[in-house]
Image (cartoon, rainbow over the protein chains, first blue to last red):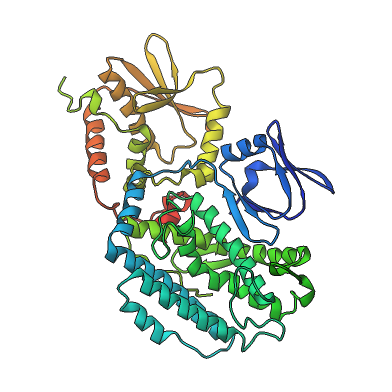
Length: 322
Length: 170
């Protein structure tokens, strides 16, 4: 990928002067080459001028905001430049047709579960979701699919604890707020991954608001939630495990607040470094016969979905071969 | 005139004519609004070439559904297209002929010039006697874009540089 994602962790200001974007913080004022920016992730307290936003909109650059706790707040999602009426109609058709929707929802859950199984195997944990996946097959309602999905995930997390070091056991998955270190780490990574997927969808003709496993009302970009089921295990979960097992993320990278356990600034920095490195890693794509980054795999998943929707090729969720 | 098409039926763009001769699969996706051009370095390069060549000409002249790179007015109007190289020559030629066909429907007689600024070459074309070729192309485009799914892609060396590569082969 030519263009780069930019993460702003420090406090400062994003401004535009003529045709240059500047980020100014305590270290000084730095120009940002706008043609080379794919998207921006803001964790610090950043003032943005409307001129800067106009410029970003013109260049089609999405900006994602995270709050003090590192959780996703929302995105500056510039007016979409890529439209396809035909595709939007197909998306809606697959949502409205019960069978078509159920089929897609199950595919997301199956792909997700297979990637979880793969992770467990990597971590030398013997387990399979075969029974639950059988149950999934016979599900006739989206709520039933969601229910199986939740049970798979619950079992999956409980199995992690067998190999996680002391002090980093999940015990019970808690979200708002995360009640311990591992929960905080998982939530932080999942938030960031969600925003990455929003960016990828922005660069396709898919409407990010029409989804299949999740209800379109659940979140503004609910299609990103659907796709995140596939990518959470192979991106976020793998990073989380590696960081604590290798002792890269330690006790001191967390702090306790009224709002649960949170990563410190230093902790966030370390996690984001690992995240960006991971997304930039290339794997040989067996179908395309070329190297693609892990971030690009998200886009390819969107393309596969487009092909499914317009009736070219049945969607097969990505199951990691790496 | 025995031309098959009436002017107000000509809704096809020059790009679509061009794509027909490059790849019908790409044409189908493009016609449905599934575009990939924003991802392509080659398209960026083309845009750059457009911006940096032929200063002083009136550029991007939109007439109905066609958009001509630039026009020169002389004894006879010249329709100019700017292209990078000759590898898609047939596609360039048909695009230019379509513009001439389109203008003829408006009662404007013109000739076309394809400019290759990088090669410092030009190629001139007139419509004379080639109306049928254009009409065949229009018919073929109408057939392809009315298909429920795109024609199966054919892998060729063109694919390597095509922005639709991943969409086609993933």
